[in-house]
Image (cartoon, rainbow, N blue to C red):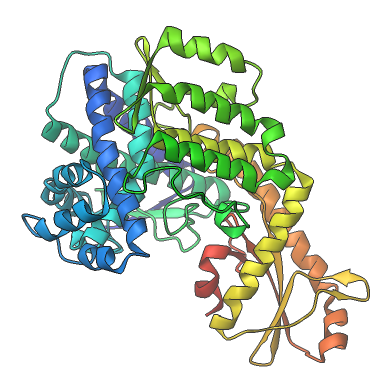
Length: 494
């Protein structure tokens, strides 16, 4: 910043942010309105498929040394080594879609440079295939948001080439979403939660340097989960139920849904509505094309849906735009455009996980079990940070979550698993702020409670210095350094 830079805060900052948000929303919507919807959606689905395939290939590579080695190489011009390796690992067609994606690497690098959306250097200017996969993970949610928005807004007759659509998609994501709307919503949230929040400006933009800024997605750019399927004893995989060489297929989705249902059987996930979702998915999957795409005529879709009209998830199944928020995003399984319902196998799976979370959220037994799993996860991470985890669960009929010791200091950790819905940041900021305030207040009361019980710990351990922390599975916005999101544990306790 030069000498002309200044600070903006309070009502003036709020007015500027809201004005920019309105202008940005209208401008972005204007870019999409004149597109031919069916053609654009079909092309975008193909682009999205290649992106999701590279993301999943990178995940597979974490347990496949040969594949991992080739993904760690710098991106060259012909990609022959990578494509040959992919042909050896995966089904026909995958390497071709990855090759098509890779032709746009130079353009993606240019957009990163132009809009400075990699200021922290997380993606290393897309040097390697792994860098590209991680970059695309960070844009996956925005890509889905754009697909919903095109289904909602595009009613014109302009048909873009694949190259033109690639540029439009990622230019919109980098400029309109990440450097634009997402950033503006983040600043408005900060201002609503912290009245002393301010931004620095030199007349060209608003810079948020506040250390209290929080990101609600994890390192894989996914929402936190109360109890991930990887954290429990899931049902063993039955060999031969699907073709492992394919990234997606109806048989694999069928297997994944059954695995989810059986893995959460102790909490009656099936009986609460997940079995109905699995049966619905089985019906719509008869329309699957090329192991990925679903495009279902409205009469056929509605005929299927009539059999599930009382399902609790039915109201969230199809994307419905929110007034004044055309880019709010969604986890809907389908979008409706014209007389066709559009989806794909990954959208169905993503929706299934969201339904799982909703159905189990109020299950008391599930809450208790997830709390124990969370505590165990914390205990496993603490030794690497120099802590000795003590075998303390109950003293004088008083329960403690996790107690550990380091450098003569006792650390008393409360593990909290309270969900904060980040979607409300865009569609209902005042409700998001109230929810955040309620959760933070609850955490602070828990800290006061533990401080009042210090004497019990001193008597049991002989340690005089005690520090109390709340470790939260779901990040919240707070300036209390004693409240730590699980994914920042190492950073906060270093």
